[in-house]
Amino acid sequence: MSPSKATSRPSSGPVHVALVAGEGTLNRVGRVVQHLTVGLIDEPLSLMLVASELDDVSSLPCPPMEVLRYMAPRPWRFRRRVVEPLAAQLLEEGAEVLHALDTSAHGLTRAIASAVDLPYLLTVWGLTEVRHLAGVAPECRGVLAVSTPVQEALLSGHGVPPDLVHVIRPGVHQGPPRGPGEQAAGRSRAILAAGQFDPSGPFEAIIRAFHELRQRGSDCVLFLLGEGPAEHRLRQLAAQLGLMHQVTFVDRLGQTQLPGIFSAADLFIYPRSDRQFELELLEAMAAGVPVLVGDCCVGDFTHEGLTSISYRPNDAADLLSKLRTLLDEPASAAALAEGARRYLREHHSPARMVAATAELYRKFALSERTLKLA
Image (cartoon, rainbow, N blue to C red):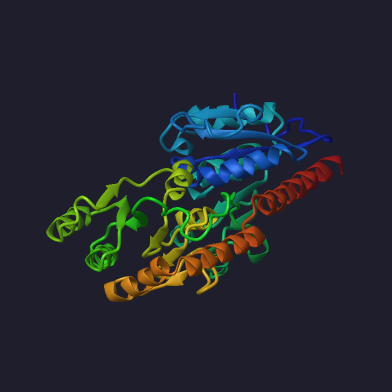
């Protein structure tokens, strides 16, 4: 039986919210979802999570948050098998607002919202997502941009009414502060670089700059986090330069694994944005790691000399110069890291993210309650 739109919904008490995760959502942005859900538990809200049967939800507060599972992949294409049972469950639990946690969850969220006449919100994480966003459904009450560049892209003619667009920046927890040179005591200093291994050169420049550092006597090791078509060529380059024991290739990790990685890093390099919000860069700053940034970012938290140092991404000599400055002047590196942490405390606190998101949930749920009573 199809779920009915004329169903009884709460007229008082806590607002009932269902967060909807698409394929891979929790792997890509799981740390932020973790901070959001933990914070929302303390709000006067009732939470549910709609997630694929393949998703690992062990890092989330379940319980008290209830989890509803759906079959993967692409469930919204199978209305009778997936959308209608989910919609019926959500109505039975009293859901009042849906929240698609990224655009991969938009199709499913939109189908459920349409089936049972529920308002929904959508979070957009990148410029590539904006380009492929073919408007929103009438039930959409808000599109949440994670940064000013994403907001500007949404407002540039992508079928999203301007009054629906809100900026809510991701919140991150910070690790304990570090002293100058603290992480390097008694071991080689660890340089970490992350991104897509594409053929256009930014990781080749990193390896060449690292080789020159070693040639000049720096005791350091390099970890390259990522994947892509240029990996074989990069491994060959490291071997040709005699660096196979100092350069380690690591598969790109899920968000929940990043804090442990950054706790052992002394410098972090982010050579090129993939036009998605750079959560790895944000997590590095939160961990107190000084960062070097190549191409400009989707996130709006990189500020020259305050939160990060920039370099030309294909210029090994420029990168070498910036690396030497940070490695040879630990006090300057520590000051840069602390400047980033101060900025994140003001603009990327989990408490700020939770409060802004909860306010929207309440606004739209209470609006629906008022319409119901009118």
